[in-house]
Image 1: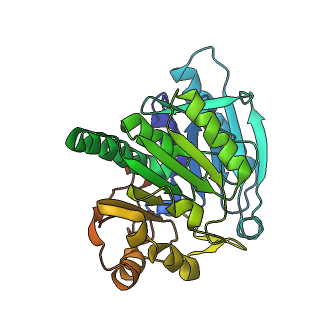
Image 2: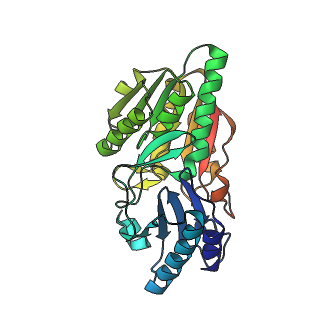
Length: 313
């Protein structure tokens, strides 16, 4: 655990939500099971393998020591989540509050934008920290589009989850974002995120895209289509068979010269999987580049890491 403890000892005072330690990237042999995130004012330690109380006590001691240096007199808040393979396959996690408390509502920041998160239940906390550069790209793309075209872009956000991409697009100057996700709870949080940032121009559709594309297509053509589906979610989306169903729709959804941002977080599928689907099923789209992941998510194998790919019609 030494690499994790060293990262804690050297960490700065967190401002925005961010990853502090990424053992999953394989750069710290022996620590592959561990991640540590800051959702200020709360730290979230996650293990993807069983742990003993001695290990947790060591992390707690390290956090207390560093926190006393960073914020003297302030209470430490941290949460532990166990996400072993058996739990992950069941879509469950074992989470417990280790010290302090968690704000309710719990709102964090990223690049001046505000997002509602929930760190005490579920595997996902409402804001995927590894997608920070993707959100930055969308915000900058929307600003560049408005400066170039003299109007705000029309954006389609598929598998929107809590609509963080929509918040970024509207903050950059997009005129309209259509958010689509079959999870009503996630969409409701997305609506809260827009209110937190005082943003108008978003619409929200709690809808299974594979049930009907008609309502989605009516809002087009779009200047930007974002697709960030789960890699494997039994009963709703399996990348190996369902991503193709999204890709083949892109030429009909995009305006001439429009862009698609296609995301994939499946370690077993490399960049070539998405590029091959686009070549075969959406030949009018040309590959335009890959958005880098945040430095905190460095990985020994870029093909296993999050893939965020840009295509242009």
